[in-house]
Length: 248
Length: 267
Image (cartoon, rainbow over all chains, first blue to last red; front, side, top):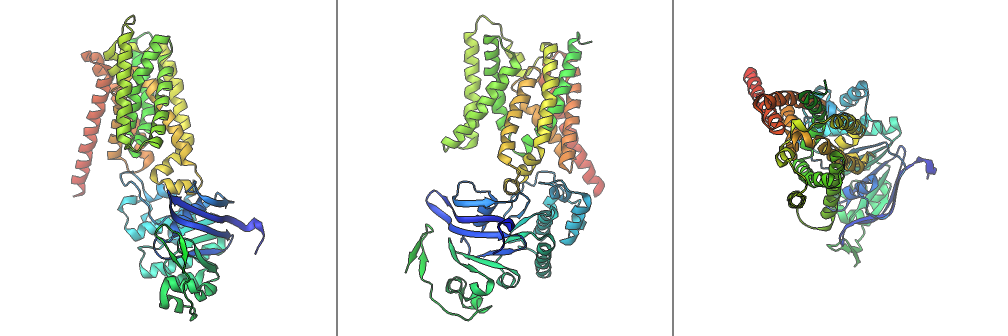
C-alpha cells in the first residue's frame, strides 16, 4: 500500500438502496494515482451504482465515501442529452471546464474524432459519440477518470486502440481510473485491481487472484475463469431479489 | 427626455429584452415554460400586496414569486402528484386568490387590463431604475452560474460527478426567474411574461447552431420585438404586452421561413 496522499477516492462499506431494495451494499475499495481499478459483474450487480457512489452523484448512501479530488472525468454508461439543444462537439468539450483550443484538438485527435469538432452532437453515430465522451473526459487532464463501459458501440479495432489510449493516459497523467467493462480479456490484461460485484463485493484483488476465485468462477462460468485460471470451487451463497445474501 | 412616456417605455422594454433573452434560452432548454407561467400568475398576488401595503410592486412580486417557487419545491417533495399538476394548482390558485383579494380592495382602483397585459403609460422613472439595476444584476449572476447551470442542463450527472454543484445553480436560477418577472410585470403584463421569455428564444433556436449563438439571437430578437411592438402600440393604441409578443411571433415566423429557404438552397 502506498501512502495516503495517493488515494483519490475511498469507499468504506458503501451501499445504496431505493426504499428497501439494495442496488449495491457493503462496497469497500479505494483508487490511487496511477492505478486502474476495474469493476466486473453480471447485469444489475451494482457496477454503475458503485461508480455513482464514488463520484458523489448519489448522496443518500449507507457507509462512507471520501473523494479527495474534484478534477474528475466521467464517461457515463447511459447519457440522455436533449438533442434539441444547439450543441456542437466543441461546445460539449468545454461543458464542465474551460479548455484551450489546442487541448480540445489534442483530445479529439487522440480518440480519432477531430473531424467532428464542428458537428452537431445530435448528428453523431453511437460510436462517434462514445469517442467524443472519452475525449471530453480526458481533455481536462483529470486526477480521477471514471469510465462506465467506455467503448460500447465502438468498432473492434477502435476498441483495442481506445483501451491502449486509456492505459497510456493513466501512465502520462498518473491519474487513477475506475473502469467498468464487460470485456474480461481487457480487464485481466490492463488492470491493477479487480473488484467483482454481485450486489456486494464477491471478491477482489489482482486479476490473477480474482480469476482463481471461486465466486468469480460461479458468476462468470467455466469459460471466463479459464481465461486465467483452472481452479474450481463452489459458490457458497445465493442472492435474493432484495439484494440480500443467503448462505447455502 | 425621460418625460416622454414612450421613451421611458422603450428604455424599459430594451432593458427587459436583454435579460429575457438568455433566461428564455434556459427556460426552453430546461422545459420550464409552465414553471415561468406559474411564477407569473402568482405575481398578481404580489401586486395586490404591494397596493394594499403601499409597497414597491417589483419588490413584492419578487418576494411572492420566490415564495411560490419554494412552495413548489416542497410540494414536489411531499406529494406524488406530477409536476404539471402541481404547477397548474399553484398557478391558478394564486391567480384566483389574487383576484379575490382585489375584490376586497374596493378603495383602490385597479387597472386589471394593465396588470394582465402591460401598460406602457405606467412605466415611471423609478421603474427604469429598477429595470436597469436589477436587469444587469440578473445577467451578472447568470454569467457566474452559467457553467454549472448549462452543464447540468445538458446532463445532470456529468455536472454533479465533475464537481459543479448543479443543485445550487438551479436554486439560484429559480430566484433569477422570480427577479425577471418582478421587473417586467408592469411592461409586459403577467399573462404574457412567459411569451417574452420563450418566443424570442424559440426564434433564436431556429437560426443558431451553438448555445452562445442562441443566446445572442434571442437577445436581438427580444430587442427588435420591443421596438416593433412599442411602435405598434403607440400607433394603434394597443396594450404594450400583446404588441411586443405579437412582434416576437412575427420574428419567429420569419425564422421558420429562413430555415425553409436554406433547405431549398442546399437542395
